[in-house]
Image (cartoon, rainbow, N blue to C red; front, side, top):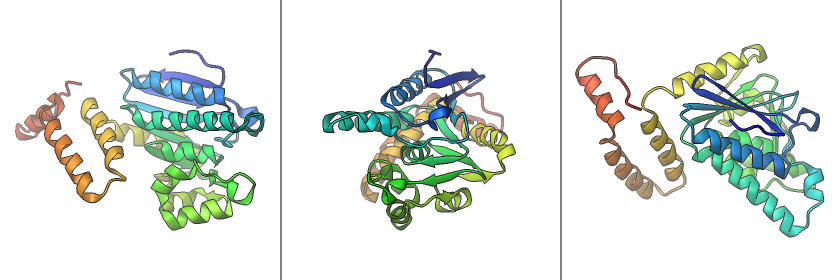
Length: 257
């Protein structure tokens, strides 16, 4: 794994952990930080790892965009920054591995966007989530995109218009995170969920993740047509063949990938 300035990357067995490491700046996201996240996810995505954990050092998960970086840019520069941010978020969803956010402390604005962009998320009881632009001068337009797809319209409107912080329990109830655990149990809960989510054929899981994201926002008829064709083709994959054979032969599967 490459070395980075703003993040730490560690491989442990089949899991890659990407840790944001700008604690003194509340893990705020400069262009350089976003580019490192994008590159680290792309690198991990090209490896034989089965899971990726997104974590953060310090008391805050991420405070969102670094206003020092934003304020120094003109319109073209801010547009480039937001395109880089969007590219980084979409890279999280494009990699074949299961990506899980390990959330503690506050995740605000683009930090909340990061959580919503991950496949799964486990939050400590101390965590909080906010789209604070609603009570400031720069509305959270892009962070609202994946958040909306996690929690629905009315809850998004409440978060985005008020800018108020949502506690971890509410975030779980709304669907922004999968579960909430005591802070001391956060690592174990992340490992347990990731372990269950990475079982089975890697190739089948990667295709499944890709197709889920592709069909989510399509009309139902289009979603069914896409899912039908992909599922038919996937039935011929070695993992599918082995899974069905193992079931029919009443034996544990031996995954080929």
